[in-house]
Image (cartoon, rainbow, N blue to C red; front, side, top):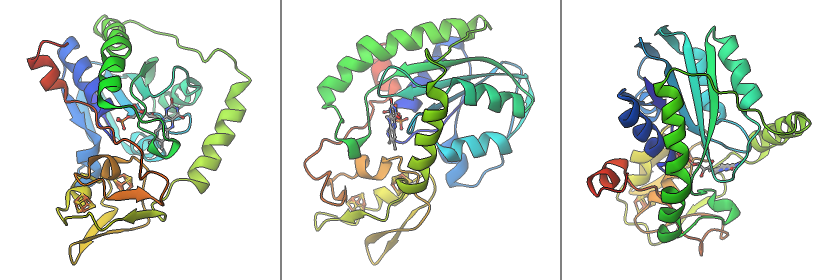
Length: 259
Ligand SMILES: Cc1cc2nc3c(=O)[nH]c(=O)nc-3n(C[C@H](O)[C@H](O)[C@H](O)COP(=O)(O)O)c2cc1C
Ligand code: SF4
Ligand code: SF4
């Protein structure tokens, strides 16, 4: 069973690719969170958790969710981290997490995908994103699927163990000082369609009098900013001129023979 969390669709694409290639089912953690569904999963095949990397680690809420989940059946879990760069030191913390929840970690995999970190301004154009998915993400997902389909073990280690404490500190600071929607602004281009509220995985947006209002539980997944049809949501003025990125749907790529 593949469980995924996503902001802009990369991790959903990755999860659906893997599910399709290993013959397993996919479950959206966004849906579970949004609708407060029970966190109980049973699978005879290994569990696979797919989520993006935020400041060097899985989003805090995903880690919390995994700790609260009741897994029955298989006791093996694989972690797939989608990310915008090529390296990440999330392996130690995810291996520790699997031990804490009484599961055996089959492996921690990295899948480089288009970078959705709009605050950093790195967001690619649709054309560049397609190139990255075709030539970087899909080959990685192909190898990952092979290991998982074979029920094999994979030992990814971040190359330099000195990075762990630094990465842990950076992640802590990021979660403490950066994760917030306090500086999100909505421009006059808003057409009150409510899409931002509909796609927010944690119901951080409520529509009042046709206007989106942000509460205090944002994850900075950037789903609302990236999916607004009018590019009406910005982080201060900083993102006004930047691209918006949303990953193509896996099923469309499959129908078009691209995967
Ligand atoms: C808040 C935030 C922080 C991020 N931090 C990192 C990072 O530390 N390293 C990295 O390689 N990519 C980083 N990214 C990029 C995402 O991990 C990457 O684009 C991911 O595939 C997005 O997945 P999604 O479309 O499923 O949300 C970050 C993105 C966001 C939104
Ligand atoms: S998605 Fe954009 S246009 Fe629609 S309500 Fe939200 S901010 Fe307004
Ligand atoms: S309000 Fe925050 S958590 Fe909700 S969709 Fe926007 S960025 Fe994601």
